[in-house]
Image 1 (cartoon, rainbow, N blue to C red):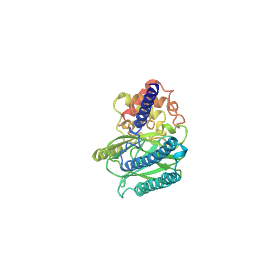
Image 2 (cartoon, rainbow, N blue to C red):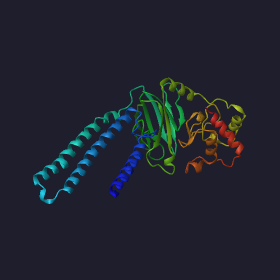
Image 3 (tube, rainbow, N blue to C red):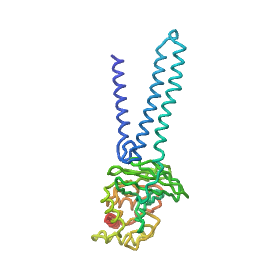
Image 4 (tube, one colour):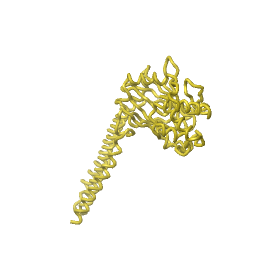
Amino acid sequence: MRRRATRRVGALIAAAVSAFALGGCAGPQSALAPAGHDASSMAALFWWMAAGALVAWTGTVALAWYYGRRGDGTRSRRRDRLLIVGAGVVVPTVALTVLLVFGLARLPRAVARAPEGSLQIAVVGEQWWWRVSYLRPDAEPVVLANELRLPVGEPVQFRLESDNVIHSFWIPSLAGKMDMIPGRVTWLTVRPAVTGIFRGACAEYCGTSHALMAFYVEVMEKDAFVRWLDQQAAPASPPPGAAAQRGHEVFLSNGCGACHTVRGTPADGVIGPDLTHVGSRLSVGAGILPAEPEAFRRWVANTGDIKPGVHMPHFGMLPDRDLRALAAYLSALQ
């Protein structure tokens, strides 16, 4: 009875661990919940490799169990040789050959550039945020930060750079990761397959706030994407309401425009993120706070506490009334 109870507890623990592990296969930042053609190919490769590993593991355990149960007097040298050659040479060779062929067949697509005329987006890895520019053939680039919007079903060509340290651009649900190396340009093609909101991150340790260098990607229907891009290209609208107007004055009088651009206003700084339409984004501080007035107030007042090592100074010395007005202005930049 005691042995049976122990086995039952062991089975329950194994089931709980399996359920916990499988829970990590879902979500907006899972490489095993693919929403892009390239991510689907990599997920398939993972499952094939997992199957190959399972075959090898099963064979090893089976041999250990087989020989552990047999006495020395019942062994056959001929059978032992066949098992060693079969399980130690033939099975691994076949399994590894299948995996190699399966993986190499996907390599040309993984490194291929997007077709001529595809949407091009330049991303620069900063410390610790993302400078994003939508490159348009016949117009000025549309500049924003820490967020991407992509049209579903269309290949997108990313041009990746860094002007400080090595970063790694990764949207697990959509495509593989690509390093951003100072002094070099790297390229990544992304082919979104379904609409939705997904999370990306820096996958290469880059300093103090590496873990807080994230971003969101919204895959949209093509018509909605075109409307969004046109809206992002427009200058900022005048601040609506007394609070937002007061916040605009606070923004300019405290020198925020020396680092940030708000198109359509005197603010034309290029050191920090472009804030022209920051209120319409999904997050503040590179994917770590929601784009809400209270989050804007917290970010401006306690920048270094929320994101250690960030280059932006905090403005906690401002009166709370001014901080709330500034948050109202930033939220109104839609």
